[in-house]
Length: 158
Image (cartoon, rainbow, N blue to C red):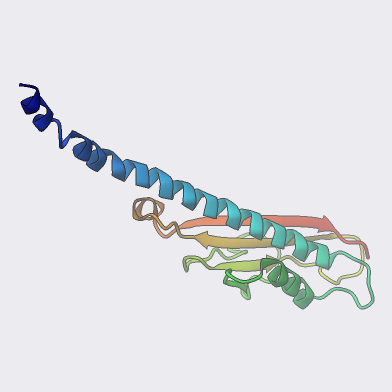
């Protein structure tokens, strides 16, 4: 009698694993994607702050737009595909400026007016990055991706 009872429960653990494994792997990989998003936000936030810092000191010669972009790119290092927002670079924010990225896992660097202009004023650097999750279920829910933005504003010293 006992042998028949064991035979009926043999496949139970395999069925339980088959039912629960998709949920487990979705949570595991979702946690990894969330970690990637936080890493990207921290990295672009640091890069925006570094670009703004490069634009505020009183030096001779005064800082240029190219120096700000170089500071941002040097802080980012490899792994990020960011381009200068040529349509809106140096223009005040508002309307369609700065531009929102449309290609997944790429982004734009936008800087406001006032870099290298004598007088006390604010300098703003903003980075927008279109994050594309790895998980197909999350990627489908996010559509084209999630725009992660970081902005830094500081007062000039010249």
